Length: 184
Length: 256
Image 1 (cartoon, each protein chain N blue to C red):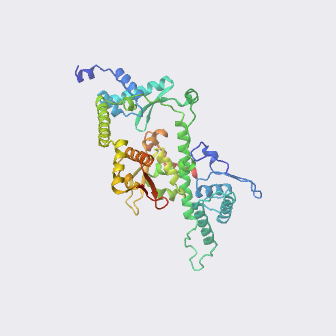
Image 2 (image 1 turned 90 degrees about the vertical axis):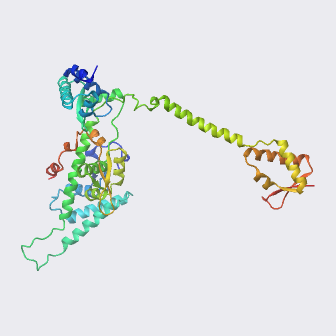
Image 3 (image 1 turned 90 degrees about the horizontal axis):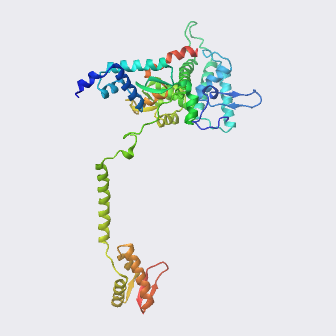
């Protein structure tokens, strides 16, 4: 069976089913581009199939949802069943970040790429341990050195940051200027 | 400190941020986890119900210094950054006490010494609010679960090995064994009887023999042991005695 023949035999429903299977087995959010490559369909077809699939999941109001996160698609449980899921898995919510770490992360997320002195300028306090914590948790990554005196290391957020904070990309973060209104 | 938990443990963002609870006279003070001097300053401004654009600098400075004194009293190490802010506040306060230049024109714009601090506070507060937003988001995200990892060649390194990988490992092991065998061939076996014979010959010829030099000639632990036993044997059976010139010095085997 040649490739073109195989391609021709797939119905939209079939593509949807295959896409569903692949999103299910993927360990992390998977892009429409990658799915298209693997199953040798064009990207638009796959994109449409995913969106149709997402609508189906939403309409069904079942225990699962298909979400767009960190630039890819992911199958996950719905938030409202977290207590039951947790009880079943016998897990507790994992450790939260400290106030200092969250603040540092916020500065990095909005100002990236940003250096340690720049973070100090905004927070008014040394952030070395917070930065170490964030690096250990892989929420931030080094983004090269800034071409200025001392060539300080610059930091930015990682893909894990997007995943852990439920963001598709950085533009989904509310604008920092919006917080100004809240402040005053 | 009320919150004894290390940095990474659970806390409630809104509860944990900034708390000084207590009457002015009694020092029943509960010190929260301030993220920094700006955080503390914002808290004090709010507590005093002061306007951030018109900070009563004398009052706030006093409160701020009081807080630092309490921290010291409670043996909490005061971070240098808190002290930097204290000096900034005192500087602003003193600049505000200076009388206006009488020569300056009436309508001349006067730089408010507080302006820079206000700008920093406003900028900081935006990020503090953003931190709260991130906190909420992560809380929501923690309620979402994805499928556990599936065993694949990539995730299970144990089965991710071909016959060639096995061969490579086997060859490495074999190569190591060849080395070991070589070493064993290298080791010259000398029997206790031969060792005794050799030593006796040297003692008879030279009259005496340094034990240290004998032991230094030995090339392996095994030979050393053999030599040692040979010495004991010679001393026991032959007319040979052990002498030592100095304590812990060399031992000399001498024919008597």
